Length: 433
Ligand code: NAI
Image (cartoon, rainbow, N blue to C red; front, top):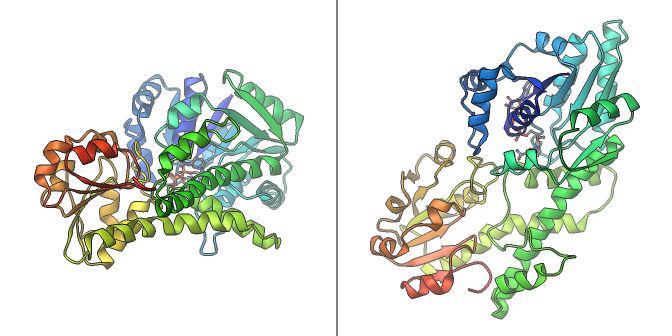
């Protein structure tokens, strides 16, 4: 089986490396020539630990290759994974332009049976729509070639992409033909996990439902953190107590400044847009989104209140990416925080081990430092926005001597409040401590 992956982003690159690890011959195509050039030189176009070494190994062995020639690629591959982006449109709907374009191209160039595996996150009903596009394109060629569309949503987390792709909690395969099901079964034969076979629509919904549920847990604990702060209750203890109940579980119950990234915000918007198309109100999800959108402002109001005013205050921002171990800044809460600080005329020195270059393109006036300590020099307050190891392991005793005011706002509740107070800091977390 020769496998093709269309779209060399976070998902496509990780998928291709893992498939190569399982011994398949994998070719990846992307319209972005610069990405393909980099990948062919064993360089990842994004930061993700553990992937670059394998990329180098499999390129040398010839198990993995990268190209921008889509026509030859489609003809040569038996199974085609579609991993292109599905960004949000203005109205929140998922933009399917890239997925539809790819599927049209497959129909234009294929000359034998193909399994087209949709890994991109797409709304319920997209499988049917793609099927229609395929049929239309093939009829234009006056040709009848069989194909199967399969929905195989991806659940990997950036920052842990390799681990998640190698050891998934489950694999969901939505397909409606015996032939495609057998091919997918064979493809995943070495993956040690449960496989759930569903219809295409069910698989499409499982992806959105899973992300929406995880985001709900986050917004729930963040909302509760606000109440805990008002009532003098420590949210961390509350979360521990809740998480000990197996029915609840402790994951995604860490109060903070809200979720970000390329998936949760956009997938929730897309699910709400899908619901509104069929006039189904989803008040829970509306609230999840509202709490998230207001969480960083709520946090920043506290910063402003403690400092009196932010005008001409020097603020050290530690952490820019939406989570540690990635360089992804898409929808990162740090962007809203920087916006807030600039609107309030504060001066910012920011540090992030991987994300600074990307944020610099949006906010060129911010000073970006190469070390966390540089960002702290002369600061009136420190904000921790991403829990990078490099930030948590700062020598906080020494750091205090660099600050003009030992004021620490921990937007991720990651440092020990009692230890920081002992060191002489005024410490503020999220949810009363
Ligand atoms: P990305 O934006 O990093 O990569 C998409 C790639 O597709 C880009 O390199 C782009 O140049 C390429 N592309 C666009 N049109 C193309 C075409 N016609 N032919 C060839 N290549 C083309 O996107 P990412 O983050 O990998 O996400 C892809 C999909 O997977 C999205 O639907 C996303 O929601 C979903 N997903 C993402 C996860 C993540 O953690 N990033 C996790 C799970 C699902």
